[in-house]
Amino acid sequence: MTALLIDFGSTYTKLRAVSLDPPRVLASGQGPSTVSTDITIGMQAALADLERHLGTLPEFEYRLACSSAAGGLRMVTIGLVRELTAEAARQAALGAGARLVGTFAQRLTRDDAAAMEALAPDIVLLAGGTDGGNAHVIRQNALTLAETSIECPIIVAGNRAAADDIQDRLAAGGKTALVTENVMPEFAALNIEPARAAIRKVFIDRIVHGKGIDRAAELFDEVLMPTPAAVMEGARLLAEGCDGVEGVGPLLLVDVGGATTDVHSIATGEPSESGVVTRGLPEPYVKRTVEGDLGMRHNVLAVVEEAGLDVLAADSGLGASQVEELVAVFADDVERLPASPQERAVDRALARATVRIAIKRHAGTIETVHTANGPVSVQRGKDLSHIAMMVGTGGALVHSERPAFILEGGLASPADPLSLGPRNPRLMIDDGYLLYAIGLLSAVAPAAAVRLAHAQLKAVEPENSGTGTSAASR
Image (cartoon, one colour):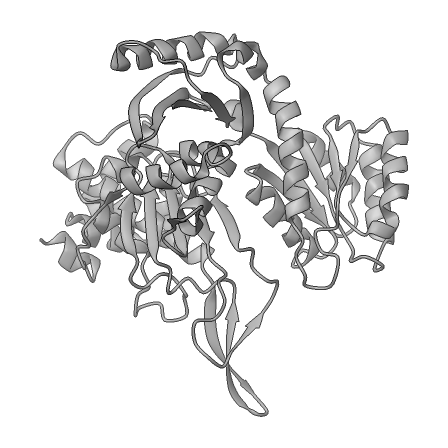
C-alpha cells in the first residue's frame, strides 16, 4: 500500500510518496505552485518530478493534501478582554493553522472596522463574554461587522446567550455566520477545539474552492487541512503514539523560515516542581505560536536587533562589523543562500538566535512573588523544561552543518533563569520535511504514520555548546 501526501505551498507544490508497510519514504517531488494561474500545472510538474525519482508512479491507495497556498488562511479575531476571550480566540486561530493578521478587543470602533476591511481576511472569529456573562459588547461588535464591506465567513464563538441574536444581525447585513461553542464558556476556561474545527471547515471552502485548488481535484482525493495544522497533527501523533505504537512523549517543534518562525508544543505545560502556583489562562495542550518578526531573510534585521550584534558575532566567530556587512547582504537579497564559510557562520548564528527567541516567547516563565504569607513561585504559560524531544525543521536547520548548535540555542540557560524552556531533550531534525505528511497520513493510517516518523526523523548529537563564544571558537 502506498500513499501520496501533497502540500500545496505558496511557492512550491511538494509531494511525498510513502509505503505504508513497511512505512518508508519512496521518493519526493516538487514543482512550482501555480495558484494564480492554474494549479494543475504545478501539480503535474511535481508529479513528473516524482516519477523521475520513482521510475513509474504506483496506484496510490491514498492521495491526501494540505495547503498554505496564496498565503494561507488570513484570519482576524475579536474578543472582549485582550488577555481572556481575545487570547482564547487567538489560540483557536493559530491552532487551526490560520495566519493571524489582526486581533481586536473590546468594542470595535470605526477605525477598527476600517482596519479590518483593509486586512481583507478570509475568515473572522468573533468571540466575547462567558456564557451568561457580558453580551452587550459582542452584540455591538456583530452590528459593526454587519455594516462593514467584509465578505468572508464569520465564526461566532462567544456568549451562547447572544448567539442567535448575533447570527440574525450578521445575516441582516448579508454576512455568512457560523455559530459554534464559546471559546471561553467560563472564566479562564478554554474551549477552543470547536472553534478550531469550524475554522478548518471554512478553510476547505474558502481556500480549496476559493483559491482554485479544486481545479486539480482529479489528481488527489481531498484537502484535509491547512499545512500548519497538518504539521501540528504530525507532531501530536509523534508525541502521543497510537494503536500500540509508542510515542516519544512531550515534544517541541521549531520551524525556522525565511519570513516567520513557528513553534509547536505538545505538552500539558503543568508545573514540574511542587508548590508552584499557575496564573493566567490555562495553556492548550497542543499549542502553536507564530513569530512574524523572526525570519532568516525577510525579517533578518529584526532578529539582529533583538539578539544583539555582539551575540551574533560570538556565535559566528566573526567580528561584529563583518557580521553586520553579511546581514545587510542577506537583507538585500532574500533569496540568497549562504555561499562562503563566513556566510554560513552568520546564517548559523542567525538561526540559533531565531530559535532561542522564538522558544523563549513560546515557553512560560516562573518568578518568585512575595506575599503576606511568604514567597510564592508563580508560573505563567507552559513549563517545557522536561519535554522529551525537540524537533527542528526549515532550511536553515536542514542544510546546516551544525544543526545541534542551532537547536541548542533554544535550551534553558542559566543566563535566563525565569524561562521555562527545555532542559535536556533529544534533538531531532525533520530533514525530509515530513511532518506535514505524517499529519495527513494520521487521518487514514495513524500507526503507519507514527512508525514513519520514528524511521525518518534524524537524530543529531548534542554539541553541549555552552556559551556562544566557546562554541564559535571550536
